[in-house]
Every structure is written in structure tokens, then in C-alpha cells.
Length: 260
Image (cartoon, rainbow, N blue to C red; front, side, top):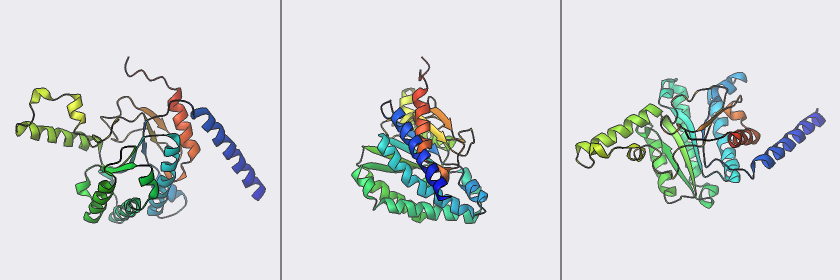
């Protein structure tokens, strides 16, 4: 049994190295966005509490950050909790909020974040989140606000339609107050009011969704116009480095014309 496991591990390592050789010298996506899907189904398959799946998924984010930094990816956006997810049970939502607060608090003492100069920002309707979580978000964003080497966005209480509505509301308020004329509004102005306005490149080059589902579920409705999409048959807690490398290789093999 041990010999079989070691053999399989050797095959995995060899495949991972082969994938790395394929992608390392080609153009990398500057901005990767990932829909972290499948935590509950992964836990259910093991007859575990759904919150355990969310915990394992949160741990996987630590590995993902290392992999993306090694690839030279500048920006990462993680879709972790939608506005619709508030409809889940009180116990599950409460557990997810506590988990989010814990993981964000750990960022404050994460040496990697400061060494790599990663700006961390939570995007979404953060006013819907518990007060304690909002306070932690403020601390993390304040601690990393001057960094611009890498960007880590965590979409929490996020909805693509909500983002567009919020941007439109801000612009309408400026027009009402006389700070902007309606004939000044264009796509560039609109983008300056999206949740991702702080980023040098708002639109993701590559969007990955785990769990086998093939839809965006309201994620980055404005920003995804020319994103390459990759849907993977793996639950998020089981996501491996080879899954990331395969997705990047898929991105590299596609011809991007941007409507030309």
C-alpha cells in the first residue's frame, strides 16, 4: 500500500513538474479570479458538517497564494460568499462569518503579505457583514493600503448586479449634487466606481470555477467581458497546484482577440 502511494506521489510530482515546464516561459495571466465552489459538497461526500468544508477551503487559499506568487500573478480575486448566500441557514452563515474574521485577522501577522507587498481588499456590500468582521476588514485594508506589487481581493457579500447598481447609484448621486454632468458618463467613468476601482487591471484575464458548475453566478458581470473561462471538475478543498497550472496552460493556448 505504501509503495503504491509513493508511486502515485511520484507520478503526481512528475506531472506537476512537466506542467510547470510548459507554462513557466509563456505569458501569464496578470489577474486571476476564482469562484471557490464545492466546499459543502466536498464535506457532504465525506459525511461531514458543511462548515468543515468551508474551513478546508479557507486553508486552501493559503496554498493558492503561494502558487500564484510563484507564477508571478499580480492580482487574485476570490469569490467566497455572495449576497444570495445569506439565505443559507443561520448556523452556516454565522460559522462562515466567524471563519472569515479569523482568516482576515491572520493576515495582519502574515509575513508573506508584507514581504510581497500584497494589498488586501474585501469587495462587496460589506455593510451587510457583522460589525466585528467589518472592523477586522478595516484593519487589514488599512495595514496594506500602500502596497501595489500584488493585489488580493476577497469578494464577500458580493453580487455582480449589486456592484453595478452601487456604481450607478454613486454616479447618480454625483450628478444630483452637481459634481458630474450626465454627458461625462462613459465606460471609464463607470469603472472608476466599481468595487475593483483600486486595481491597475480590473478585468481578470482568467476566471476559474471549481466543482464542475459551468456558470458565473453573477460574478464580475462587468469585468468578465473578455475573460477566459475555465471550469474544473474538482471541489475547492481538493484544488491542487496542477489544477492551477492546467488552467493557466488552457489560458495560454487560447487566442485572445478582444473583438478584433
